[in-house]
Length: 486
Figure 1 (cartoon, one colour):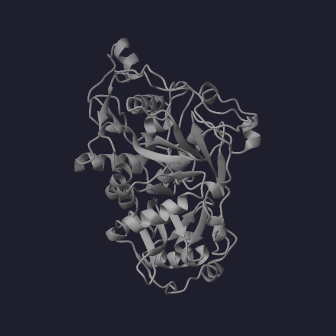
Figure 2 (cartoon, rainbow, N blue to C red):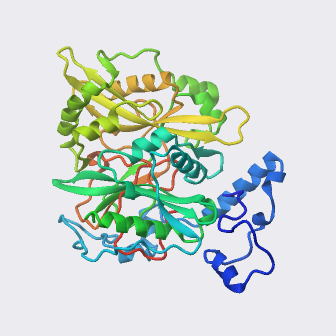
Figure 3 (tube, rainbow, N blue to C red):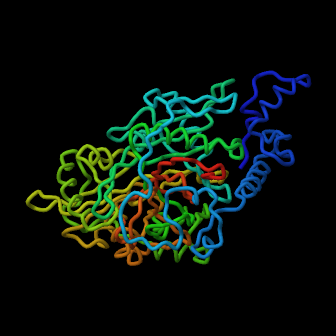
């Protein structure tokens, strides 16, 4: 990846007469090795096509080696960080339930120190200018496809939805700024979440949007962000976690396939070379294969209203009992997460003749920018959030949801094979990608579970090596120097 800003840590001036002490301070986070040749050239002066070629090459070069993505690779890998953490070891047979380490009593009262030139900033997202800054940081630096053609495009409304659920805390929206120009160059956030692990209820935090400016990726900003957020979370008495990753770490409690795609606009997806589609299929066959009816079939299917919150709460409480890993949602959280918001999330319910709610499906919106394409500038994806069916078949309900999503302008529908999703994925012509998603518990042991017993969907995970993923929830007691989320 390439960033056009020439120097985030420098002030306005500078010259050949800089003192050695000042030069050393400015280079505190400078990675070792040869000088970056791209930093010596202004890309703005090059043609747009040449800029794209250089950005793509530098992005692929920056990916470097990755953590293991299969169990076979993991067995040969040395986990210098995770071997120091309270997590089960690969190969351990777990039959009991409970914490691996008891909670600590000594929590640092002062913030962790940043290198000179950087400062912590608690972000007040009610300030529209701060919210715009965060949107810019995430959209330019959070996630993009390996070929540098598709990049995340989070809206202010989406960020407020995902970062301000009931009982959110301002001090858990943590940013890093450059002292000289106040530019926002790092961010990490946490929100409270309750889950049920088998029959045990635990209060956790869900860590969202771990993001570091591209130019600081090699300068060890990530560990400092994690340590400071951990300190702030620990002050609230939270010490266990659940998180998800596209790589194999010690030790998954469950693994599923990420992700299943169902094209809704195959022509557009093929034109932008969307990853995961069958490249051997021609356009005419793709359109014919993914054809959907124009109208829905299920009687009583309609968008959720605020008055449906209590009915959905009862429906989900009954459904959640069938799973080993599931959220515990309050009535206020039901309303926050499921009440439809334009270009953020959608929820549909099925109302019986007597007024009771028998089924529900919710999905959220993930928008992305298409870079340097002559026609298309954006993609709109629907990600399945939660579903509960009592009176309608899952495949029948999901087909109507696909029809509704297509009518609302979505280009693709995505899902995991958790919950009961396998009952409809192949029937409704979802295509399986080659990526996996692994679920983990931090400082907690329990027997492994099959993916159809997992109901927790983690949105926008900071840990996962994929385009868009589900959120990471963690607590770190001591951070190893080798850990990097990127």
